Amino acid sequence: MKITVVGAGAVGASCAEYIAIKDFASEVVLLDIKEGYAEGKAMDLMQTASLNGFDTKITGTTGDYSKTAGSDIAVITSGIPRKPGMTREELIGINAGIVKTVSSNLIEHSPNAIIIVVSNPMDTMTYLVHKTTNLPKNRIIGMGGALDSARFKYRLAEALGAPISDVDGMVIGGHSDKGMVPLTRLATRNSVPVSEFISEDRLEQVAADTKVGGATLTKLLGTSAWYAPGAAVSGLVQAIACDQKKIFPCSTLLEGEYGLNDLCIGTPVVLGRNGIEKIVEITLSDEEKAKLAESAEGVKKTNGLLEL
Image 1 (cartoon, one colour):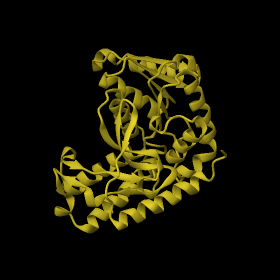
Image 2 (cartoon, rainbow, N blue to C red):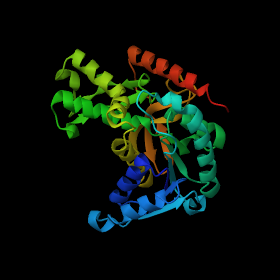
Image 3 (cartoon, one colour):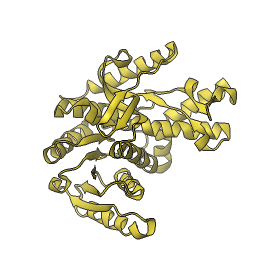
Image 4 (spheres, one colour):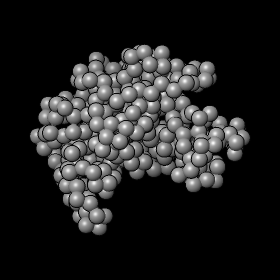
């Protein structure tokens, strides 16, 4: 099992680290355009192998896509990160060109790879890969919902005063501050609806805090977060590599599901060895349907900025 991570910055390196520590892949290739950067990150990570007890080989390369040949899964994290005050949508012009080039090079050397898109604006970049590669829809996955759901569960556990292992919840919709739809109605604490424990007002605050989760961290850190995004990607990669059939909310191309067409947006999917093996259509309330439709309009507006 060979995994390529394009972009050896904070998110890409964290992703490679978590994949290696889980020890399910034979090799992780880190690729970056900055001379020596991926090689240095790979060497640093390999020097943790005996300490962290993994045997995954981590290789770094500067722009040499031949080193990625035969990858089963490829992760695209490359692009500029958000700065304080910058929206994900403002990144579109720069990152679209990068993602098109990267995806083309990856497919040239690994025509059977499953591609996971992390670059922002993520739903639009996932749609771009669909439109420019002609890969089957099951092999193109946008990461956002897995990260947003992890942030939702963090905020839920905080509000409940509960261990996070007791909490379950999901965020669907666009991976943007306005587009996320945290499904508070379906969130549970050990199978009990969280509404049994906290007020509606507190739940609404949890949802609001979740939606600005990335922006909150960008303001604190001065750049985008990396630990949770890296962990979210590694979870998707492991589900595919190990054929786990796990459900994650991921950005996927919809063709009528949820009444939506011709866009990529976060919905629950089953992930296994073939990538997206099933889109799960859950029953939404009228309010949730309206929020998802509004989110979809926002994604389509951003998609309209693409030069396809």
